[in-house]
Picture 1 (cartoon, rainbow, N blue to C red):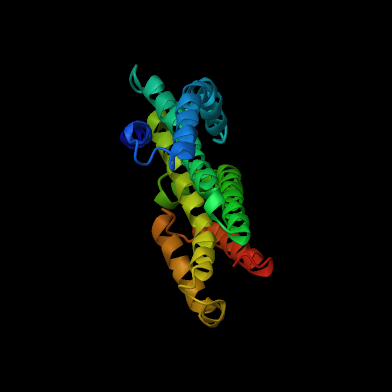
Picture 2: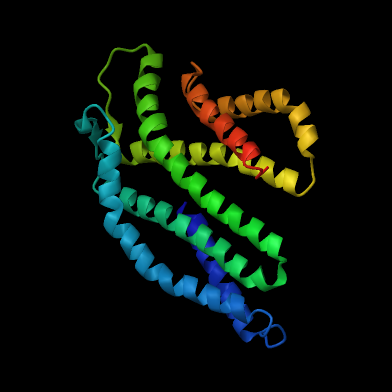
Length: 248
């Protein structure tokens, strides 16, 4: 995660510097350069805000356990490392969506009216689905996983968790949930780009949904299928809702 964020930040910085120095394309890319500059400048206070609130977020996830005392710190650096990992995970959301909005503003003048509307709908949809997936993952998937997975071991023993490993599990579960909830948007994009038609999708819908279940089963660590089904049902609901409101 740290390597990815550093690479992403350096990429935006280099892109800004290149656009700043290249006089040939400076006029065409001036708007993008200004947007990237704003993104880079605001990254500092946003990073500070993420760092400030990271302990509260860590404590919130610890409280999801039936006994918060099950989480322990195994070495002196574990607390600050975990805090930094959580900070960077939150900051990555800002960079990704910030970059997406920068690109939208940059290409906005070159788009037709219906293209602008579609692009904006998808940005709002991505942001909304991310929030919904985080809420669903936090209050449904993670608590269910914490209850079901230890039961599957069949070992009657007190459970203890390293803080770093526990937060890795939490954010791993959230990432899987978010990507699972993105699947209907990817299906929507394929139809919008005419890679597949709506009629083709409707004819092969049962096969598509079986394939989606197989993908979820491969992503989730639950061998009983309970957690997989808990993610599968809302995913199908989101897909059907998008069909009904003609976003697909």
